[in-house]
Amino acid sequence: MSVQENVHAQDAAAKAVTIKVNNKPVTMPDRKATGAQIKAAAIEAGVQIQADFALFWKTGGAPLKPILDQDAVELHEGQTFTATPPDDTSQS
Image 1 (cartoon, rainbow, N blue to C red):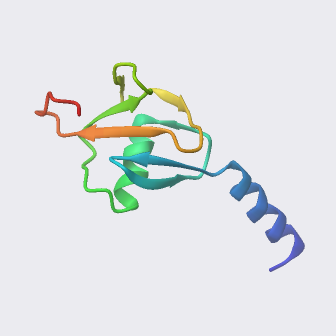
Image 2 (cartoon, rainbow, N blue to C red):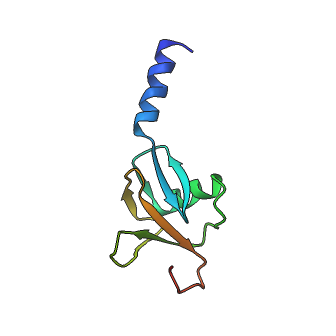
């Protein structure tokens, strides 16, 4: 690996963040993503969800916050999301 490739790899790793979707770790390449990008990365990571699932941000003891496909989210290490089938209204 050249010095330039190594620097690029280090920059990419510095921007990457690991979140959780349905209690499974998902590494995101950037610290900002849309709801659709979060679901796509989760699917790629093997989380058993589909692109049409509803996505929610778990914010501690507060109510779940819905994240639409087009919504941009600033991601933080360990941030937790739940994805549920579109006909599941339990949002657990």
